[in-house]
Image (tube, rainbow, N blue to C red; front, top):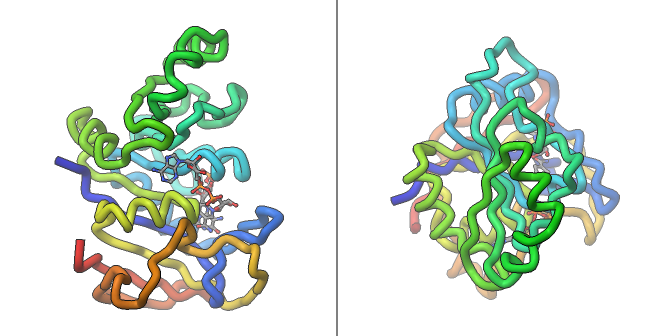
Length: 223
Ligand SMILES: NC(=O)C1=CN([C@@H]2O[C@H](COP(=O)(O)OP(=O)(O)OC[C@H]3O[C@@H](n4cnc5c(N)ncnc54)[C@H](O)[C@@H]3O)[C@@H](O)[C@H]2O)C=CC1
Ligand SMILES: Nc1nc(O)c(N)c(N[C@@H]2O[C@H](COP(=O)(O)O)[C@@H](O)[C@H]2O)n1
């Protein structure tokens, strides 16, 4: 079993979610409110470790009125358990689960870092050898009560999740500017598919303007 997974992201018209320097302020104010309403609705919110390092996100509901119990469980996909102890996702605002890979587990669980994390109430889940096994992780999250999960990037995790058939819905804010750059992050990076035929098919079910931005909402078809 797996949670219902909604990928939400903001990109420029040319498909970039961050520049090569990590600059990623893309959404307008109205879109950020939409994002936080979605955060309030879901049980969990998941990002890759590079997003934690680049953005130091809170991953809580903080741009609209909310109670602490509205915050989703925060999940970081972090094979080598590199999450900085001072990262905001380790604070007490919400529960946090760090998903690591088995090859790095033994060394990590005897470290002071592990003791510090567990003292802060952070939970760990290990699966896969060198990389987190995302199917296993989805099953674990579902069994832990996370029935709806918002995926908030970045590009590498987005691609692994869609390749594994784990994304059900995609909600994209397209902002009216371009930044270019072959080293910028796009909505899906990873290794990519070789041919267009292998591409994951989507069905647009809603689109609307929000402030200056355009919101596109798709169902994922061939999972
Ligand atoms: N505009 C937007 O909506 C958003 C933009 N971003 C941007 O995305 C950038 C970060 O993206 P990325 O560098 O691609 O990193 P990422 O955040 O996708 O993290 C990828 C890392 O996760 C780990 N990982 C472990 N198991 C994995 C698996 N099975 N599959 C994939 N990854 C696995 C690996 O260490 C991998 O390098 C940042 O600059 C951030 O600002 C991130 C979220 C939203
Ligand atoms: N929807 C959206 N629009 C943007 O313009 C963004 N840069 C992001 N980024 C995601 O939101 C995280 C920051 O969350 P907090 O406000 O700190 O809680 C960031 O890490 C990305 O996952 N999203």
